[in-house]
Length: 396
Image (cartoon, rainbow, N blue to C red; front, side, top):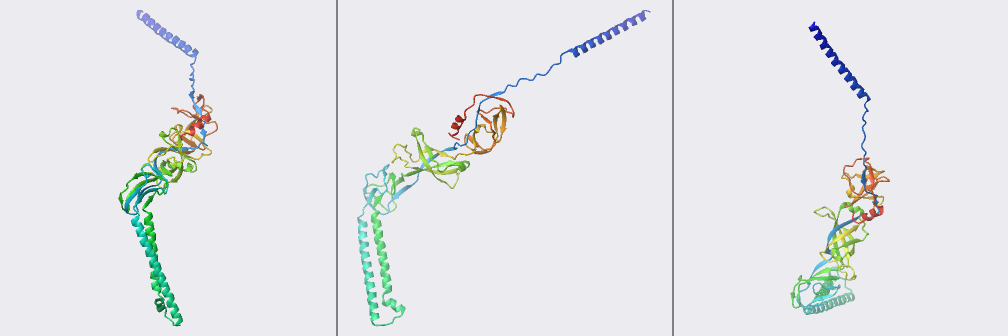
């Protein structure tokens, strides 16, 4: 009886536990069904603030600046053409002097050459007389045989009429005339003059010096024009304006410039960087005729500014905004868009582009990191198109 009562109590406890579990599960189910469902809230996307500017005007000329060294257009070592003693040196013939073409430099003793000229002139008179005698004898012989009515063979006739003698006399006369001309030329060479408008670089003789043929008397440089060689990238050559003035700059000129002109495109490229080479010419480099202009000296190193042609139907883009593959991030309708424009010419800081940009495209003033297509942006104060065009023309 006691055993049966214990089993009854134990069964009651089990049912009690089951009831508690059932009631707890029901309560949990009610809580879950009636609890509010959480919703995902998208965070607000903060558009990045960017500063933009319109593309620049493509009508601005591209400019190429490079350095170049000044060289002489014409530089000679003036040498003696006759030998002798220097009897006079012009007072103005000193290093650094600027002289006109034909100005006297020095005189070599002329007396010997004057005597030689007199001898050659006398020989010329004698040669002329010899020819006259032979021609007279020939005429006399012709008259005699004509009066005698004698017929001569062609070979005999030439001898009788002294034709070989006349030919020899004519040759002697020509030689005598040439000798006179040579003597006159040598005499004129005893007076040494400036071959062009120029400056004396150095002098190698003095009064009393004995000089021989080919002895160097002066080092001279032509001052009418100096040249400057400048290197230019091959890509700039199609846009180079050969008619536009070339501007030269030098730190010692206090902001002044000199104008030059393009002389020629040299036939070979530079052996180091493979760039093309241009020669530009500067008239009156020492400012002898225009004293207000700065002086350009030999071996000066100057900055050369070459003007390009306006690139029509194009706009300019700062080169720093271009990606390595030629693409470009722009802002249009407050969104970032990637463009791939056609690059017509690329300078040091600017690129001239043709097709590829759309109306409303604006350029970033500063590059952005982590840009994606369609990314929203907010616009700060824009740079004006006038400011952009002004900055374009300085140095592309």
